[in-house]
Length: 214
Ligand code: AMP
Image 1 (spheres, rainbow, N blue to C red):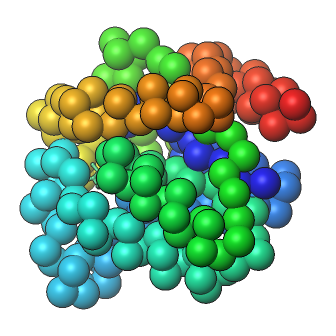
Image 2: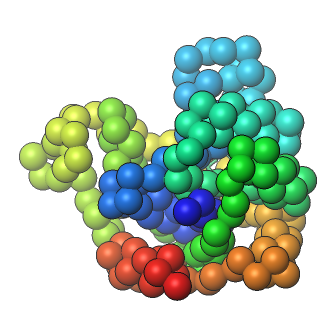
């Protein structure tokens, strides 16, 4: 079972991916996390993409396809959740070939639908545990009162540098210009399954499970 979680920034892709990883022993492949890791560890590629990410632009297809290719070969035989990839038609085509090369197929694309106004609030209210990446939200899932992450007990929480109004506007623009065409692409392939991303975390999870059960 290999699936894509598709949706604009703040749709809840990362949150849902983490729940699926725990529940079904799947492997989350988040190109955003991989790029942030490269940036934080100061690799040459990380330095090249830092400015692009801060502005909210998309990193080049070659770079992200290369990252995914590496992970697919490293963990071949796993069940993958693609989170934040593909984001362009070229990436969607490349994913098809990469999966074919490792003898795997794509089973479902979950489109997480959310209202644009809700995204802005979600993004600006978002923080994560620095240690394990557990996602918190000031409104719906605040950081614990005892200051310890519910998942790992970590005590440091960070807000992403690109979770600000300017960068978000550009990330949304990139989504509508370059990523939204892949909704039609996967619809035509018979793989598209929309879910309402605005519900409670557990409700959205149940909707996703319902899709995967079919
Ligand atoms: P995310 O964590 O998925 O919101 O991604 C954060 C940033 O990383 C994006 O705004 C892009 O700059 C970059 N990025 C992540 N995934 C991709 C991708 N598949 N293609 C191009 N850029 C990406």
